[in-house]
Image 1: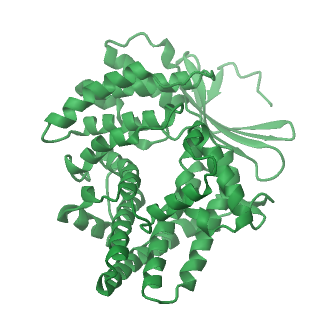
Image 2 (image 1 turned 90 degrees about the horizontal axis):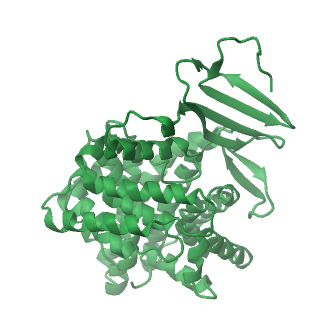
Length: 459
């Protein structure tokens, strides 16, 4: 690496791009800032990926303050905000929680919410312990019980739910899920709180960025649990139905959050309702109800295709964002690589929603004895996208691997027998310590899970 030793002003780059290829590191300077004016400076890795050719790597660093040396903080809330910001700023992109946009909006809300402070303390403590690389679980049970004790009366006694309390609910659930890996996540315990974000708090304000993010992030967990429980009560009511139709048929302009994230959130709600409707149709065997469901499923499937053509197709066509590399471990012999994690997240989110909607539509065709070959082909295509992403996901953190278990399960029944065995092993691998809760022969259990997630099995 070359450095100008005659630079007497000791300038430091605010952003760096490092390209390491065959032992050579190239540094690109984008802007500079004097060390003399800010002596407490650290470099934080914000992006890291493999070079498209050769064995090199590409790393982007950002200059930020070293929050550990600040002494001007005046209150415990300030110290807690500093701790949270340090977690956000120091994350290298290997955990799904610090990457969530709503987390960056919490420090300013801490002074007004002791409940949120308890949840942030839990998260920060768990994050710090997770970096110690010990065999001890990073989950802070004492902080968890304190945060849970603060939340319970707030949910039970308040006729309405404010945004900081909703943030505390989601942060508590996320911390328990991602950090308490030594036992099965008690998500049932959190469902009342997550559903309160919708049933008590209501629809988010389009002008409140944090409110919108909380709604979208909580919906995914709520939907999965409600489908498995055979319940869709949280999404009944004309206000939510009207919002869903608006999301599908209109461009949503919001402050600080992209319309595609909100639209995907509403697509997820439709998945829940379609799965619930298919269960009722299978039990009642009424032709009129089946025809109605087929029309509803087709409308959502068509909207998803339009969304994919608008948002995903340009990214797939750009070989600097998503490209394929030879990989014999994947059916077809090629795997995806992504220049940014967000592209992988978008692709897999679409796969996760598309497969059940398409499967439900295919099931209605089968009930009506109509041909569905084109739907079977699309299910294969969607599943293959999931499989081609496996090598990339395997290079990420265990928490990120765990977040792809659902689309893997949904794709399982579309794999041939040889690939199915490999896919089951991958699911077990991605579940990490929680794989001990699977039966010794998990294939049938996982296939049954896929049937339940698509409304084709009783709950």
